[in-house]
Amino acid sequence: MRNIFFIIGLLIAVAWTSNLDASIIPIGILSDSELNSINYSSSKCVNNVGGHNIQTFDIPKFAPVLGELLSMDIKLSFEFFGQVHVFSPIIDQTVIVTEGDIRAYFSPQLNGDLRLLPYMRQTVPISGELTEDYVPIIYDSFKWNDQYLIESLDGSDAFDGELNEYIGTGNIPLEVWVGFNSTITSDPISVVQIGQLDIDCNLTYNYVVPEPASLLIFAVGGFVIVRRRKENRV
Image (cartoon, rainbow, N blue to C red; front, top):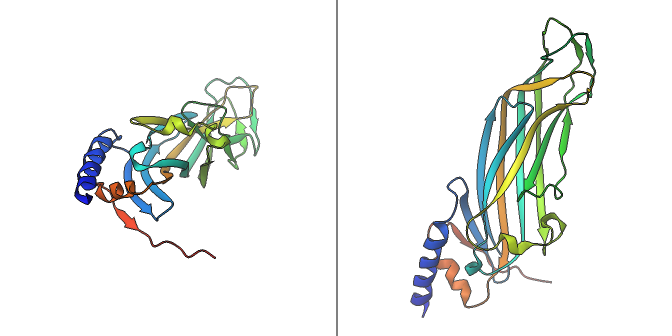
Protein backbone atom coordinates (compact mmCIF):
# COMPACT_ATOMS: atom_id res chain seq x y z
CA MET A 1 0.00 0.00 0.00
CA ARG A 2 2.82 2.42 0.86
CA ASN A 3 4.36 1.78 -2.57
CA ILE A 4 1.09 2.78 -4.21
CA PHE A 5 1.02 6.07 -2.28
CA PHE A 6 4.64 6.68 -3.19
CA ILE A 7 4.02 6.21 -6.92
CA ILE A 8 0.87 8.37 -6.85
CA GLY A 9 2.64 11.11 -4.92
CA LEU A 10 5.60 11.09 -7.28
CA LEU A 11 3.36 11.44 -10.34
CA ILE A 12 1.43 14.29 -8.71
CA ALA A 13 4.63 16.08 -7.76
CA VAL A 14 6.03 15.87 -11.27
CA ALA A 15 2.80 17.18 -12.79
CA TRP A 16 2.51 20.03 -10.26
CA THR A 17 6.11 21.23 -10.35
CA SER A 18 6.00 21.37 -14.15
CA ASN A 19 3.57 24.31 -13.79
CA LEU A 20 5.83 26.39 -11.53
CA ASP A 21 7.54 29.52 -12.75
CA ALA A 22 11.31 28.97 -13.05
CA SER A 23 12.08 32.11 -11.02
CA ILE A 24 10.28 30.76 -7.94
CA ILE A 25 12.29 28.01 -6.28
CA PRO A 26 10.72 25.58 -3.80
CA ILE A 27 13.14 25.47 -0.86
CA GLY A 28 11.53 22.98 1.47
CA ILE A 29 8.64 21.25 3.16
CA LEU A 30 8.43 21.19 6.95
CA SER A 31 5.88 18.97 8.60
CA ASP A 32 4.61 17.47 11.81
CA SER A 33 1.49 15.42 12.46
CA GLU A 34 -0.75 18.51 12.43
CA LEU A 35 0.74 21.52 10.65
CA ASN A 36 2.84 21.54 7.50
CA SER A 37 4.43 24.31 5.48
CA ILE A 38 5.97 24.63 2.04
CA ASN A 39 8.26 27.52 1.13
CA TYR A 40 9.32 29.24 -2.09
CA SER A 41 12.03 31.83 -2.65
CA SER A 42 12.98 34.23 -5.45
CA SER A 43 15.13 37.37 -5.86
CA LYS A 44 15.39 40.35 -8.16
CA CYS A 45 18.02 43.04 -8.66
CA VAL A 46 17.24 46.46 -10.21
CA ASN A 47 19.97 48.85 -11.35
CA ASN A 48 19.46 52.64 -11.44
CA VAL A 49 15.95 52.95 -10.00
CA GLY A 50 13.97 55.76 -11.59
CA GLY A 51 10.74 57.47 -10.69
CA HIS A 52 8.56 54.38 -11.07
CA ASN A 53 9.49 50.73 -11.58
CA ILE A 54 7.47 47.53 -11.44
CA GLN A 55 9.04 44.19 -10.55
CA THR A 56 6.84 41.10 -10.88
CA PHE A 57 7.12 37.84 -8.97
CA ASP A 58 5.02 34.92 -10.22
CA ILE A 59 3.65 33.27 -7.08
CA PRO A 60 2.88 29.55 -7.58
CA LYS A 61 -0.53 28.50 -6.37
CA PHE A 62 -0.92 25.95 -3.59
CA ALA A 63 -1.32 22.37 -4.88
CA PRO A 64 -4.52 21.00 -3.29
CA VAL A 65 -3.13 17.44 -3.41
CA LEU A 66 -0.83 18.41 -0.53
CA GLY A 67 -3.69 18.96 1.91
CA GLU A 68 -5.97 21.71 3.24
CA LEU A 69 -4.59 25.25 3.00
CA LEU A 70 -4.90 27.13 6.32
CA SER A 71 -2.94 30.33 5.71
CA MET A 72 -0.18 31.90 3.69
CA ASP A 73 2.35 34.65 4.15
CA ILE A 74 4.83 36.51 1.96
CA LYS A 75 7.94 38.23 3.28
CA LEU A 76 9.66 40.77 1.05
CA SER A 77 13.13 41.93 2.11
CA PHE A 78 14.62 44.85 0.19
CA GLU A 79 17.53 47.26 0.13
CA PHE A 80 18.08 50.50 -1.78
CA PHE A 81 21.64 51.80 -1.94
CA GLY A 82 23.47 54.33 -4.11
CA GLN A 83 23.39 58.00 -5.08
CA VAL A 84 20.13 59.92 -5.47
CA HIS A 85 20.03 62.61 -8.18
CA VAL A 86 17.31 65.28 -8.17
CA PHE A 87 16.91 67.49 -11.24
CA SER A 88 14.35 69.38 -13.26
CA PRO A 89 14.17 68.81 -17.02
CA ILE A 90 12.23 72.05 -17.54
CA ILE A 91 12.89 74.99 -15.27
CA ASP A 92 12.68 78.78 -15.66
CA GLN A 93 13.26 79.76 -12.05
CA THR A 94 15.11 78.53 -8.99
CA VAL A 95 13.40 75.64 -7.19
CA ILE A 96 14.12 75.10 -3.51
CA VAL A 97 14.29 71.45 -2.42
CA THR A 98 14.03 70.92 1.33
CA GLU A 99 14.56 67.79 3.37
CA GLY A 100 11.34 65.80 3.24
CA ASP A 101 10.45 66.73 -0.37
CA ILE A 102 12.00 63.59 -1.88
CA ARG A 103 10.88 60.13 -0.84
CA ALA A 104 11.52 56.55 -1.87
CA TYR A 105 8.58 54.15 -1.85
CA PHE A 106 8.01 50.38 -1.82
CA SER A 107 4.54 49.02 -2.55
CA PRO A 108 3.59 45.36 -3.18
CA GLN A 109 0.37 44.75 -5.10
CA LEU A 110 -0.86 41.18 -4.86
CA ASN A 111 -3.04 39.89 -7.67
CA GLY A 112 -3.51 43.43 -9.00
CA ASP A 113 -5.75 44.56 -6.12
CA LEU A 114 -4.67 48.08 -5.17
CA ARG A 115 -6.88 48.15 -2.06
CA LEU A 116 -5.02 45.49 -0.16
CA LEU A 117 -1.56 46.70 0.71
CA PRO A 118 -0.26 50.09 1.89
CA TYR A 119 2.89 51.87 0.71
CA MET A 120 6.11 52.02 2.65
CA ARG A 121 7.97 55.34 2.31
CA GLN A 122 11.38 56.62 3.30
CA THR A 123 12.51 60.25 3.18
CA VAL A 124 15.74 60.98 1.33
CA PRO A 125 17.64 63.56 3.46
CA ILE A 126 18.49 65.79 0.50
CA SER A 127 18.14 69.56 0.08
CA GLY A 128 19.42 72.34 -2.16
CA GLU A 129 18.53 74.56 -5.11
CA LEU A 130 17.72 73.67 -8.70
CA THR A 131 18.58 76.47 -11.10
CA GLU A 132 18.44 77.10 -14.83
CA ASP A 133 21.87 75.54 -15.37
CA TYR A 134 20.28 72.06 -14.89
CA VAL A 135 22.89 70.95 -12.36
CA PRO A 136 21.31 68.18 -10.23
CA ILE A 137 21.29 67.99 -6.47
CA ILE A 138 23.07 64.79 -5.41
CA TYR A 139 22.80 62.79 -2.21
CA ASP A 140 25.83 60.50 -2.15
CA SER A 141 24.91 57.59 0.08
CA PHE A 142 21.21 56.80 0.30
CA LYS A 143 20.49 53.44 1.93
CA TRP A 144 17.14 51.95 2.92
CA ASN A 145 16.61 48.34 3.91
CA ASP A 146 13.47 46.92 5.42
CA GLN A 147 10.99 44.05 5.31
CA TYR A 148 7.37 43.91 4.18
CA LEU A 149 5.28 41.09 5.60
CA ILE A 150 1.98 40.06 4.04
CA GLU A 151 0.11 37.65 6.31
CA SER A 152 -3.08 35.67 6.14
CA LEU A 153 -4.59 33.87 9.11
CA ASP A 154 -7.58 31.77 8.10
CA GLY A 155 -8.17 33.97 5.06
CA SER A 156 -7.99 37.33 6.82
CA ASP A 157 -8.05 40.83 5.36
CA ALA A 158 -4.53 40.70 3.92
CA PHE A 159 -5.82 38.36 1.23
CA ASP A 160 -9.35 39.73 1.18
CA GLY A 161 -10.68 36.49 2.66
CA GLU A 162 -10.15 34.64 -0.60
CA LEU A 163 -7.59 31.90 0.01
CA ASN A 164 -9.31 29.82 -2.66
CA GLU A 165 -7.81 32.12 -5.30
CA TYR A 166 -4.38 30.78 -4.33
CA ILE A 167 -5.25 27.09 -4.69
CA GLY A 168 -4.79 25.20 -7.95
CA THR A 169 -2.28 25.25 -10.79
CA GLY A 170 -0.45 28.14 -12.40
CA ASN A 171 0.75 31.40 -10.86
CA ILE A 172 -0.59 34.62 -9.36
CA PRO A 173 1.34 37.85 -10.04
CA LEU A 174 2.85 39.80 -7.16
CA GLU A 175 3.84 43.24 -8.44
CA VAL A 176 6.26 45.36 -6.42
CA TRP A 177 6.11 49.08 -7.21
CA VAL A 178 9.32 50.88 -6.30
CA GLY A 179 10.79 54.28 -7.04
CA PHE A 180 11.05 57.90 -5.94
CA ASN A 181 8.65 60.82 -5.92
CA SER A 182 8.55 64.46 -4.90
CA THR A 183 6.11 66.59 -2.95
CA ILE A 184 7.04 69.64 -5.07
CA THR A 185 4.18 70.49 -7.41
CA SER A 186 5.21 73.89 -8.73
CA ASP A 187 7.80 72.51 -11.17
CA PRO A 188 8.45 69.10 -12.74
CA ILE A 189 11.02 67.27 -10.61
CA SER A 190 12.76 64.03 -11.62
CA VAL A 191 14.52 61.69 -9.23
CA VAL A 192 16.78 58.75 -10.06
CA GLN A 193 18.96 56.50 -7.95
CA ILE A 194 22.35 55.64 -9.43
CA GLY A 195 22.86 52.37 -7.66
CA GLN A 196 20.94 49.20 -6.95
CA LEU A 197 17.79 47.76 -5.42
CA ASP A 198 17.71 44.15 -4.22
CA ILE A 199 14.42 42.36 -3.45
CA ASP A 200 14.05 38.90 -1.89
CA CYS A 201 10.63 37.24 -1.91
CA ASN A 202 9.76 34.33 0.38
CA LEU A 203 6.35 32.63 0.23
CA THR A 204 5.04 30.15 2.82
CA TYR A 205 1.88 28.07 2.58
CA ASN A 206 0.66 26.52 5.87
CA TYR A 207 -1.60 23.49 5.61
CA VAL A 208 -2.72 20.22 7.21
CA VAL A 209 -2.52 16.78 5.68
CA PRO A 210 -5.23 14.21 6.51
CA GLU A 211 -3.92 10.70 7.23
CA PRO A 212 -3.00 8.61 5.30
CA ALA A 213 -2.50 11.31 2.65
CA SER A 214 0.56 12.52 4.55
CA LEU A 215 2.42 9.67 2.88
CA LEU A 216 2.24 11.70 -0.31
CA ILE A 217 4.58 14.30 1.16
CA PHE A 218 7.37 11.76 1.41
CA ALA A 219 6.78 10.73 -2.18
CA VAL A 220 7.28 14.24 -3.57
CA GLY A 221 10.47 14.40 -5.59
CA GLY A 222 12.55 17.54 -6.05
CA PHE A 223 11.93 19.03 -2.59
CA VAL A 224 14.00 19.03 0.56
CA ILE A 225 11.77 17.28 3.11
CA VAL A 226 12.33 17.49 6.86
CA ARG A 227 10.22 15.58 9.37
CA ARG A 228 9.92 17.31 12.72
CA ARG A 229 8.94 15.49 15.90
CA LYS A 230 5.65 16.51 17.38
CA GLU A 231 6.16 19.05 20.14
CA ASN A 232 5.00 18.12 23.60
CA ARG A 233 1.97 20.07 24.62
CA VAL A 234 1.39 21.25 28.18
